[in-house]
Length: 247
Ligand code: GLP
Figure 1 (cartoon, protein in one colour):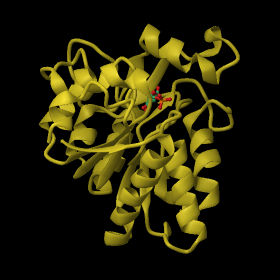
Figure 2 (figure 1 turned 180 degrees about the vertical axis):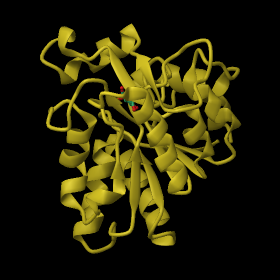
Figure 3 (figure 1 turned 30 degrees about the vertical axis):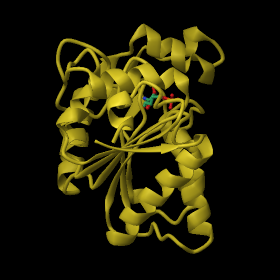
């Protein structure tokens, strides 16, 4: 794992956007794996700025999102479809036909999940997967458990995740209890992975992910087995990454 420490959230966001921009410049028709949550919002804002200042062209870029809440339609302000439109897609020249997000309302979820994996395969896999990290070490919505799930699947959200994401909803009862998430297969098959983290509340999760043995109890720990992982995190999130800070 390669670690870039930054002073704060804003510099993390700028560096992450530059990293993603380099990928798009090197391969204009690349497949980006996209994340949601509060962490990448600043990164997306910087990508929008690069597009507006004519430094970046998304016309051939394809995107696959990590996850979506079960039961939320694309019009729902809390859906990840809505999030992507509001925080990135509507401001750049990406072709909506080239953007993929699991469908939270599909009446046949198993078929939807299998189809999602087929889409990712048909695109040739992911060139650069962007990840945030949950405080319990989840990536996408791959929650702590007994096994790593390979394929796109439906998950019961962990209590802690429901509590953490409550801030986006009117009240805790409104937070969906289930979600669809890309599995570890597509994430680990990505050619490159970029994980972003900001704030001291993410420090224990980063420690468990990178300084302790690989375990499905800490889903992000599987990234130790990936050959090309870059972490861009601010100082506060890096507080417990001692082995990497020495180098
Ligand atoms: C959410 C998303 C994840 C995200 C994580 C952290 O539940 N499913 O993809 O990385 O939780 O979110 P945040 O960046 O808001 O801390």
